[in-house]
Every structure is written in C-alpha cells, then in structure tokens.
Image (tube, rainbow, N blue to C red; front, side, top):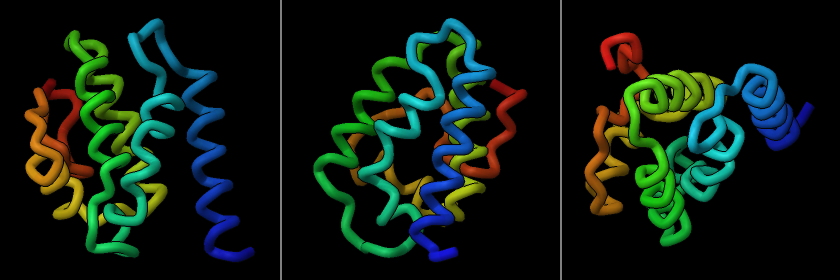
Length: 116
C-alpha cells in the first residue's frame, strides 16, 4: 500500500473512531483533524513552510475548544492523530508561535491529557 493511501486510511480510521466515540463537544475530533489537515505537510516534515490555511485552521480550532472537558477530549484526539501521522513533536510545539496564537494547553504529542 502506498504511503498516501496508508495515511488516508489512518485519517479515515481516526475520523470513524471519533464519530463513534465523540461527545457533545463544540467540535468533534473528526472536525478538528480535518481543520488541521492543511498543517500536515509541515507537521510531518514534508514542508518547512507553514501555510496560511494551516494557521487559519489552527486559529479556528483554538477558538472552538473552551471548557476543560473539551480541552481534554481534543488533547486525546490530537494525540491519536499525531501518533498515526507520525507528527514531529518539535514542529507541533512550534506551530502556535509560528501562527501567532496562544493555546490553553501545550501543543505536544507527548502531553499528559489527564492533567488538563
């Protein structure tokens, strides 16, 4: 199976899992992953440039997740997506600064979501 097909399958799997396990949050895991897809090339090291659509998506997502349960749920969602896509942790940590946004929790694929 080609790398592109494998990544697509993983993303679809995460989206299906999110639909099955999502709570009544302001934004679902599926929506969050979809919103951040323009960041994928930067986050996995294919590109050294963060695109405008990436920062637009990151900013939009940041504005939709407000409560502690939502933050914890989104943390778990994005950790799963980061692991599945092999996101480079340092790039994930740098994204808020590059996009000039402040996040309520650290952007880190290794974050402890239970501490939120």
